[in-house]
Structure formats: structure tokens, C-alpha cells
Length: 136
Image (cartoon, rainbow, N blue to C red; front, side):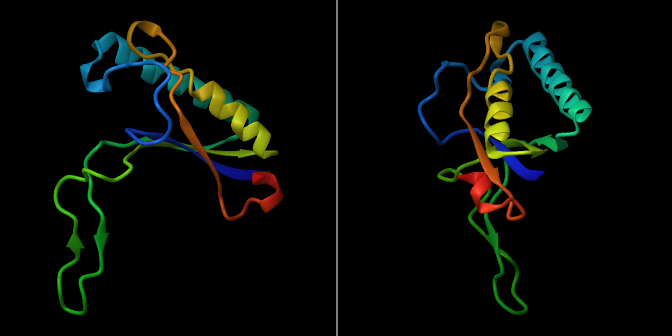
């Protein structure tokens, strides 16, 4: 088994296939349906033994680095304007890269506004523990 991280992005990556507004503009029922779908998806992966963890992230945050001995950390400011913002992740433990891609493809079909599958681009990244040949 190898662990893979499936990343959801706020922006970045190829052009969207489905033109949908940001989640904060969705109807509450659509948000609830989306979240429930994600929970059900995680439950299916738990049952197959392929689930490790998942979490949605808020769009805020900043890059931070060490500012020097005795100095405060340096940040890029309160808003990350040009960075690739991660919206959430799904960590899975699967037999192969092909299975990770298969799961990501299913995960991409989470419902959006009106229940229409988002078909959002997701990034699949092997963990360092994954054999290089699994990721190729």
C-alpha cells in the first residue's frame, strides 16, 4: 500500500471544466449536499481500508518563514494573493498510483450548485513513502 495526497485547490491548475461560483455563494442546501457527499465518500474509503484522513481548509493563511534569531517570524501579509491555495485534502492508502487516480476521479465528481458534479481538477501526489515506480 502507498499513501497519496489528493489536493483540492481554490485556484491554480488547468481551466475549470464546470463554471461554478465559490462555495460561499452556493445555496445552503447545496453546501450541505456537497459536505454529505464528501463524508459518504470517506465512509466508502474507510470500508475499503483506503482512507487515511481528509480535511477542508479555509482560504485564509500566509507564507511564514524564520525571521532570524530573536526576531519574529516573517509573513507575506494577511492575504495570500498569488499563491496556490489548498482548499482541502484527502489522504488515501492504496495499492497503486492507478487506484489513487481512480479515487481522485470519483472525488472530483462531488456535487456543486444544483447537484451538478463539479468535475474539479484535483492534484494527486504520492507521499515519500510511495515507491517511485508507483507514481509514474
